[in-house]
Length: 119
Image (cartoon, rainbow, N blue to C red; front, side, top):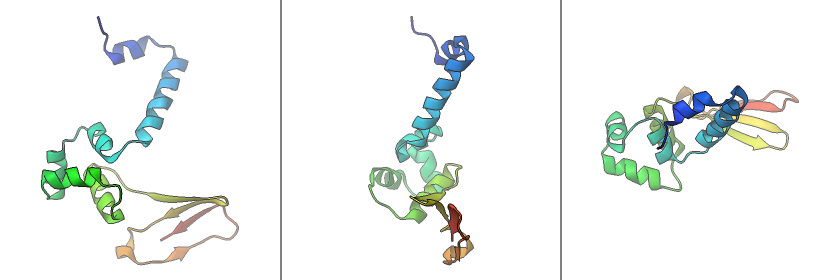
């Protein structure tokens, strides 16, 4: 007979629990948009209601391979999250802040730092 995962999880050693949690975190970070919505316990209908659009539009958004960042931001916000955009360069990470100040383009770049912020 199958056991519930939480019961099995509680019987694991603390080290094994940490390994499982690490793998779950890694998988969670790599979810497709539809999987992310499902992980938030939202149906397409519920998400559509939050965005003020119909369910068919959510289906189309989830199947897209390319979309505006503003669309993605709105979907993520409707799920209760916040979209952050980070560019990775050999010299370091750059966090791109595209959604502040009404979308005005400003640069804030520190000297000789491996992490930069671009607005």
